[in-house]
Image (cartoon, rainbow, N blue to C red; front, side):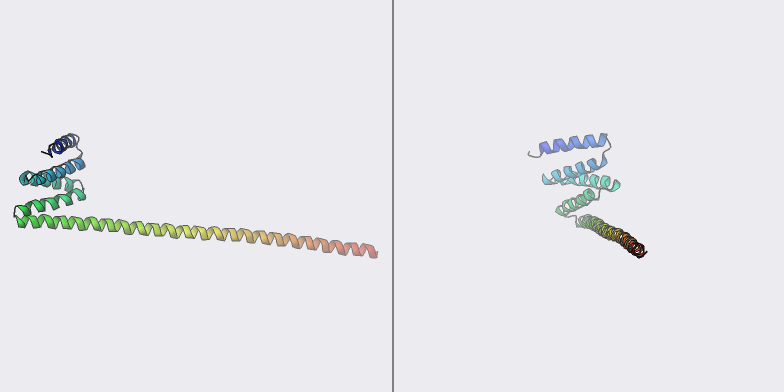
Length: 168
């Protein structure tokens, strides 16, 4: 059938992931195998694969795989008219989807808060730099005025001294 090569590679992935304890890949391969089996109407084995995927992914924190496995398992059970368990797995799917969306929203809020704080700090840095430049220019102006005052005083005293010498 058209799924033979896919099943071959999925079985290879299952064997490799199992031998090397790569649990995330093992959960994903079980899920993919379940999808293929469901597609070819082998619901009994598909349910087994979806349950394996749920068990492994829930143990190792792969909510995305667990969520999709619950969704597909719910559809398998619905086709078999096992509505009680179909509803249970659909509720689990919904619960995980809401949890995942809540996590994503919390991360977005955190990211927005951090970027706001960064922008706020960058603006504060620019203001402080402008104030520092203004203070530097202020000190330069004071030094220039003091130098100008000294020069005027010097020329004034020089003028007074020259005027006295001429009188004498």
